[in-house]
Length: 226
Image 1 (tube, rainbow, N blue to C red):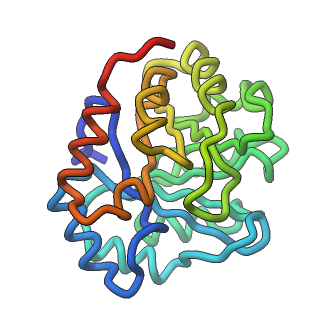
Image 2: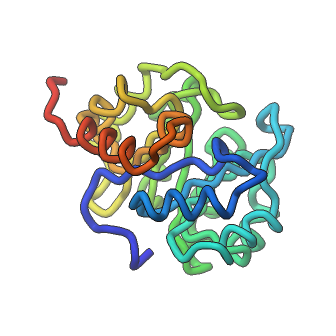
Protein backbone atom coordinates (compact mmCIF):
# COMPACT_ATOMS: atom_id res chain seq x y z
CA UNK A 1 0.00 0.00 0.00
CA UNK A 2 2.99 2.31 0.38
CA UNK A 3 3.10 2.73 -3.41
CA UNK A 4 -0.45 4.09 -3.59
CA UNK A 5 -0.77 7.88 -3.86
CA UNK A 6 -1.99 9.58 -0.68
CA UNK A 7 -4.27 12.00 -2.49
CA UNK A 8 -7.86 11.16 -3.39
CA UNK A 9 -9.81 10.41 -5.47
CA UNK A 10 -8.12 7.35 -6.92
CA UNK A 11 -9.46 5.34 -9.86
CA UNK A 12 -8.96 1.57 -9.61
CA UNK A 13 -9.63 -0.50 -12.73
CA UNK A 14 -11.68 -3.63 -12.30
CA UNK A 15 -9.83 -6.73 -13.44
CA UNK A 16 -13.26 -8.28 -14.01
CA UNK A 17 -13.66 -6.18 -17.16
CA UNK A 18 -10.24 -7.00 -18.65
CA UNK A 19 -9.43 -9.39 -21.48
CA UNK A 20 -8.65 -12.61 -19.59
CA UNK A 21 -6.84 -14.08 -22.57
CA UNK A 22 -4.32 -11.24 -22.39
CA UNK A 23 -4.37 -10.47 -18.68
CA UNK A 24 -0.68 -9.68 -18.32
CA UNK A 25 -0.86 -7.34 -21.31
CA UNK A 26 -3.94 -5.66 -19.84
CA UNK A 27 -2.15 -5.11 -16.53
CA UNK A 28 0.87 -3.66 -18.30
CA UNK A 29 -1.32 -1.29 -20.36
CA UNK A 30 -3.13 -0.10 -17.24
CA UNK A 31 0.14 0.37 -15.36
CA UNK A 32 1.48 2.42 -18.26
CA UNK A 33 -1.69 4.52 -18.20
CA UNK A 34 -0.95 5.41 -14.58
CA UNK A 35 -3.46 3.48 -12.47
CA UNK A 36 -2.59 3.40 -8.73
CA UNK A 37 -3.74 -0.19 -8.16
CA UNK A 38 -6.20 -2.88 -9.22
CA UNK A 39 -9.61 -4.00 -7.99
CA UNK A 40 -10.07 -7.78 -8.06
CA UNK A 41 -13.58 -9.24 -7.73
CA UNK A 42 -13.83 -12.75 -6.32
CA UNK A 43 -17.21 -14.43 -6.96
CA UNK A 44 -18.33 -17.84 -5.76
CA UNK A 45 -21.46 -18.55 -7.81
CA UNK A 46 -23.45 -18.66 -4.56
CA UNK A 47 -23.53 -15.23 -2.93
CA UNK A 48 -23.55 -13.82 -6.45
CA UNK A 49 -24.74 -15.53 -9.64
CA UNK A 50 -21.33 -15.63 -11.28
CA UNK A 51 -17.87 -17.16 -10.90
CA UNK A 52 -14.61 -15.30 -11.25
CA UNK A 53 -11.12 -15.49 -9.79
CA UNK A 54 -9.67 -17.98 -7.36
CA UNK A 55 -6.32 -18.14 -5.58
CA UNK A 56 -4.21 -19.13 -8.62
CA UNK A 57 -5.38 -16.15 -10.68
CA UNK A 58 -4.82 -13.72 -7.80
CA UNK A 59 -1.35 -15.19 -7.28
CA UNK A 60 -0.63 -14.71 -10.99
CA UNK A 61 -1.80 -11.08 -10.82
CA UNK A 62 0.38 -10.56 -7.76
CA UNK A 63 3.42 -11.90 -9.63
CA UNK A 64 2.64 -9.61 -12.57
CA UNK A 65 2.32 -6.30 -10.74
CA UNK A 66 3.74 -4.60 -7.67
CA UNK A 67 0.79 -2.22 -7.46
CA UNK A 68 -1.71 -2.68 -4.59
CA UNK A 69 -4.47 -5.24 -5.04
CA UNK A 70 -7.89 -4.33 -3.68
CA UNK A 71 -9.59 -7.72 -3.37
CA UNK A 72 -13.37 -7.82 -3.02
CA UNK A 73 -14.72 -11.14 -1.72
CA UNK A 74 -18.26 -11.63 -3.01
CA UNK A 75 -18.56 -15.03 -1.35
CA UNK A 76 -20.86 -16.64 1.19
CA UNK A 77 -18.22 -17.89 3.64
CA UNK A 78 -15.37 -15.34 3.72
CA UNK A 79 -14.11 -16.38 7.16
CA UNK A 80 -12.88 -19.66 5.68
CA UNK A 81 -10.76 -17.97 3.05
CA UNK A 82 -9.41 -14.61 4.20
CA UNK A 83 -6.03 -16.01 5.22
CA UNK A 84 -5.56 -17.70 1.85
CA UNK A 85 -6.44 -14.54 -0.06
CA UNK A 86 -4.01 -12.51 2.00
CA UNK A 87 -1.33 -15.13 1.30
CA UNK A 88 -2.24 -14.95 -2.40
CA UNK A 89 -1.42 -11.25 -2.51
CA UNK A 90 -4.28 -9.04 -1.33
CA UNK A 91 -3.36 -5.64 0.12
CA UNK A 92 -6.97 -4.71 0.90
CA UNK A 93 -9.49 -7.45 1.61
CA UNK A 94 -13.20 -6.60 1.60
CA UNK A 95 -16.02 -8.84 2.81
CA UNK A 96 -19.79 -8.38 2.59
CA UNK A 97 -22.00 -7.32 5.48
CA UNK A 98 -24.86 -9.38 4.06
CA UNK A 99 -23.16 -12.67 4.98
CA UNK A 100 -21.92 -11.65 8.43
CA UNK A 101 -24.17 -11.12 11.45
CA UNK A 102 -21.37 -9.33 13.31
CA UNK A 103 -18.51 -8.50 10.94
CA UNK A 104 -16.29 -6.91 13.56
CA UNK A 105 -14.43 -10.10 14.47
CA UNK A 106 -13.59 -10.99 10.88
CA UNK A 107 -12.54 -7.42 10.09
CA UNK A 108 -10.18 -7.51 13.07
CA UNK A 109 -8.79 -10.84 11.88
CA UNK A 110 -8.09 -9.40 8.42
CA UNK A 111 -6.27 -6.46 9.97
CA UNK A 112 -4.24 -8.83 12.15
CA UNK A 113 -2.98 -10.47 8.96
CA UNK A 114 -1.28 -7.21 8.01
CA UNK A 115 -3.65 -5.92 5.33
CA UNK A 116 -6.45 -3.39 5.29
CA UNK A 117 -9.97 -4.61 6.04
CA UNK A 118 -12.99 -3.51 4.07
CA UNK A 119 -16.73 -3.98 4.52
CA UNK A 120 -19.12 -3.87 1.55
CA UNK A 121 -22.87 -3.32 1.35
CA UNK A 122 -25.23 -4.03 -1.53
CA UNK A 123 -27.81 -1.50 -2.79
CA UNK A 124 -30.76 -2.96 -0.78
CA UNK A 125 -28.79 -3.04 2.51
CA UNK A 126 -29.53 -0.08 4.81
CA UNK A 127 -26.36 1.79 5.60
CA UNK A 128 -27.31 1.91 9.28
CA UNK A 129 -26.74 -1.84 9.61
CA UNK A 130 -22.97 -1.40 9.42
CA UNK A 131 -22.62 1.52 11.84
CA UNK A 132 -21.38 -0.71 14.73
CA UNK A 133 -18.64 -2.15 12.49
CA UNK A 134 -17.27 1.15 11.18
CA UNK A 135 -14.51 1.51 13.83
CA UNK A 136 -13.15 -1.85 12.63
CA UNK A 137 -13.02 -0.83 8.95
CA UNK A 138 -10.11 0.58 7.00
CA UNK A 139 -12.41 0.83 3.97
CA UNK A 140 -16.15 0.83 3.33
CA UNK A 141 -17.33 -0.23 -0.11
CA UNK A 142 -20.71 1.02 -1.26
CA UNK A 143 -21.99 -1.11 -4.12
CA UNK A 144 -23.87 0.94 -6.69
CA UNK A 145 -25.05 -2.16 -8.56
CA UNK A 146 -25.99 -5.64 -7.41
CA UNK A 147 -22.73 -7.60 -7.49
CA UNK A 148 -22.16 -10.35 -9.99
CA UNK A 149 -21.85 -8.78 -13.43
CA UNK A 150 -20.29 -5.70 -14.97
CA UNK A 151 -22.01 -3.13 -17.16
CA UNK A 152 -25.00 -2.49 -14.89
CA UNK A 153 -26.80 0.81 -14.38
CA UNK A 154 -25.72 2.92 -11.40
CA UNK A 155 -28.07 2.83 -8.38
CA UNK A 156 -28.48 6.40 -7.09
CA UNK A 157 -28.94 5.23 -3.49
CA UNK A 158 -25.15 4.85 -3.40
CA UNK A 159 -24.75 8.63 -3.37
CA UNK A 160 -27.00 8.91 -0.33
CA UNK A 161 -25.11 6.17 1.51
CA UNK A 162 -21.73 7.74 0.74
CA UNK A 163 -22.93 11.08 2.08
CA UNK A 164 -24.11 9.47 5.31
CA UNK A 165 -20.88 7.52 5.72
CA UNK A 166 -18.71 10.55 4.98
CA UNK A 167 -20.08 12.16 8.12
CA UNK A 168 -19.66 9.05 10.31
CA UNK A 169 -16.31 7.45 9.50
CA UNK A 170 -13.03 8.77 10.85
CA UNK A 171 -10.50 10.51 8.64
CA UNK A 172 -8.48 7.33 8.08
CA UNK A 173 -11.36 5.24 6.70
CA UNK A 174 -11.55 5.07 2.91
CA UNK A 175 -14.91 5.27 1.16
CA UNK A 176 -15.11 3.31 -2.07
CA UNK A 177 -17.84 2.93 -4.70
CA UNK A 178 -18.15 0.16 -7.27
CA UNK A 179 -20.59 -0.39 -10.12
CA UNK A 180 -21.67 1.82 -12.99
CA UNK A 181 -18.97 4.39 -12.32
CA UNK A 182 -18.47 6.23 -15.60
CA UNK A 183 -18.33 9.67 -17.20
CA UNK A 184 -21.89 10.47 -16.09
CA UNK A 185 -21.64 9.33 -12.45
CA UNK A 186 -18.04 9.77 -11.34
CA UNK A 187 -18.20 13.46 -10.38
CA UNK A 188 -21.15 13.01 -8.06
CA UNK A 189 -19.51 9.96 -6.49
CA UNK A 190 -16.58 12.12 -5.45
CA UNK A 191 -18.88 14.94 -4.38
CA UNK A 192 -20.72 12.45 -2.16
CA UNK A 193 -17.52 11.36 -0.45
CA UNK A 194 -16.02 8.50 -2.48
CA UNK A 195 -12.23 8.38 -2.42
CA UNK A 196 -11.68 5.11 -4.32
CA UNK A 197 -13.59 4.72 -7.56
CA UNK A 198 -13.77 1.27 -9.11
CA UNK A 199 -14.14 1.60 -12.87
CA UNK A 200 -14.74 -1.23 -15.30
CA UNK A 201 -15.88 -0.87 -18.89
CA UNK A 202 -15.74 2.94 -18.70
CA UNK A 203 -11.95 2.47 -18.75
CA UNK A 204 -11.07 -0.94 -20.16
CA UNK A 205 -13.76 -0.69 -22.81
CA UNK A 206 -11.86 2.18 -24.43
CA UNK A 207 -9.03 1.97 -26.96
CA UNK A 208 -6.69 4.43 -25.23
CA UNK A 209 -6.46 3.67 -21.51
CA UNK A 210 -4.24 6.64 -20.67
CA UNK A 211 -6.46 9.19 -22.40
CA UNK A 212 -9.60 7.73 -20.86
CA UNK A 213 -8.06 7.66 -17.39
CA UNK A 214 -7.11 11.33 -17.75
CA UNK A 215 -10.65 12.15 -18.80
CA UNK A 216 -12.16 10.28 -15.86
CA UNK A 217 -9.84 12.03 -13.41
CA UNK A 218 -10.76 15.39 -14.93
CA UNK A 219 -14.42 14.60 -14.37
CA UNK A 220 -13.83 13.18 -10.91
CA UNK A 221 -12.09 16.28 -9.64
CA UNK A 222 -14.51 18.77 -11.14
CA UNK A 223 -16.57 20.62 -8.54
CA UNK A 224 -20.26 19.79 -8.80
CA UNK A 225 -23.27 20.80 -6.72
CA UNK A 226 -24.68 18.28 -4.27
